[in-house]
Length: 98
Image (cartoon, rainbow, N blue to C red; front, side, top):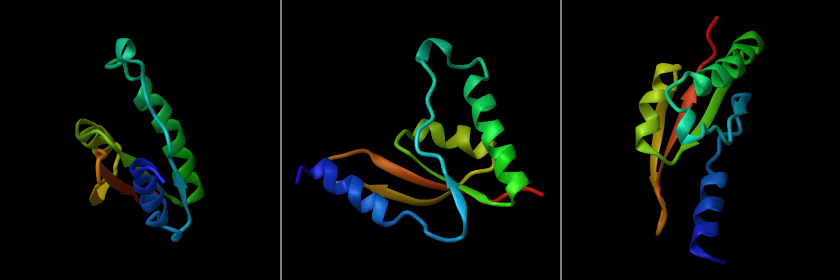
């Protein structure tokens, strides 16, 4: 098994099972469209649904520069994972807002 696959599977095994939450697997904006609020609007719509449902949200970021972006939306780093021959990953959690 390639090391990248092994690293990814190790991350998945550490994915929280409880409490009930939304797993935000992929969010990205084309570099030419960054800074226009598009990512915030998409993320905001999902987080509004999380808040209505009363559930948290979980994601993993492979870019340290994105940690501050997610923090502005209420996420906090729960763990930093250094993958063998891969990027550092920041596991992030957001509690629902009432």
